[in-house]
Amino acid sequence: MAALPSLVPIVTRWHTAYLPHPLYAPLRPFVPLAGNDDWPAQADYDRLLERARAAGSAVPCGLRFVCDLEPEDYYELHIAQSGEVPTRHGNWHDWFNALAWLAWPHGKAALNARHARAIARGEVRRGPLRDAATLLDECGVVVASADHALTGALDDMRWHELFVARRRDWGRRIGAFTLGHALFETGLEPHLGWCGKALVLAVDEAFFDLPYERQLAALDQRLATALADDDWLARPRELWPLPLLGIPGWWPANEDPAFYANTDYFRPTRRAKSASVS
Image 1 (cartoon, one colour):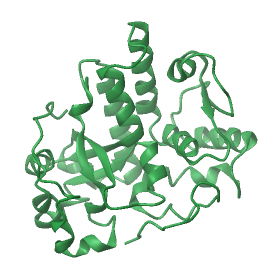
Image 2 (image 1 turned 90 degrees about the vertical axis):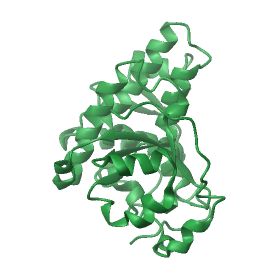
Image 3 (image 1 turned 30 degrees about the horizontal axis):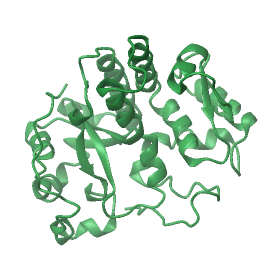
Image 4 (image 1 turned 135 degrees about the vertical axis):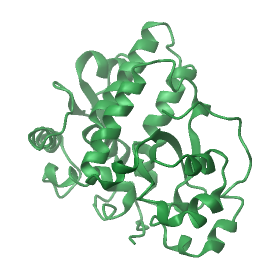
């Protein structure tokens, strides 16, 4: 099990020591493609895109990460209209956003299209639809589940059942796939209280027999198809809290069942029921 390293200061020093942790599994194929040993510059981002496309990433044609671009229009609208993703140099948040585009090309494009549709309808200053899209984009974890009981345990915040009693089912009947680029950034210095927002997608049992890259590609396509319907994931409350350090294999201390007794982190408070799982 790989623990996330604690590296100080995380905001200035370039490194890739985070990659072995399961949080970053969707990004692993792409980081080496940039071919850089320091903060990526424009040429590195261009090379990254070229090599990712050649390796089979379905990143939208015409998309480009543009260093230090300051768009005159809304961020999401600028991307939708120009294909240019403003990307700050020396910035973890934007580096991980670029990698998320490569790992989740259909889902990220669908999130951007949802923002553009909402803005066109007048939801300029954000509303429930755009807030939900932003929360998924920043903090989302796609949870693939082939077991209604496990899905119910997550929804009802029955953490001992989800993480202890059903521990061996992780990777076999349920799995977590990180999408949110803010989570990739905060994962550089994890802390108790660190949570993601879970979006559960139902899968069949055969899903977990697939190679990881095919699992991720299937979820990416499913996510994009679902996001095309603006009645789906229409408000932030439809995303479920997920204490990331509780996921088996994600934090050494959770090998001890006593770790889950911390109710300040593993809160038992029930929420209003969310939308049905797709």
